[in-house]
Image 1 (tube, rainbow, N blue to C red):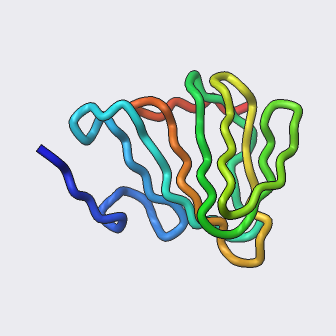
Image 2: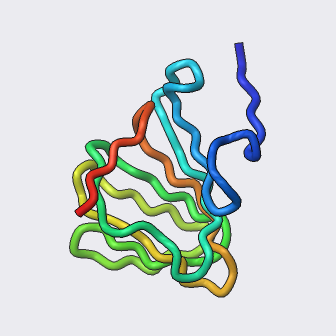
Image 3: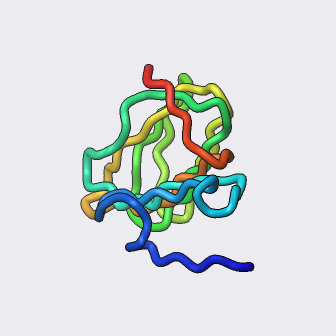
Length: 111
């Protein structure tokens, strides 16, 4: 049976909403729906699985290991499992993106 969920029904706020696959029938993926204001973003951290950022609007500066990536709407940034990463929104409007965690739950190790 299919599940239909409205974004506003996911836990979170106007900046970030969270979907955990384990809470929706054991789906093997979790994600954030982000609308990060300028300068907003998480500090460096790692996950024991890959994370995929799909940018829909705006731009951001991503740390991925030793690399700094300037990405904008239409870009996809992939960070391998265990690699230190983070981002900051750099556009004048919000950085709208989907941050996909390849796991049914989110596990974060802050650096």
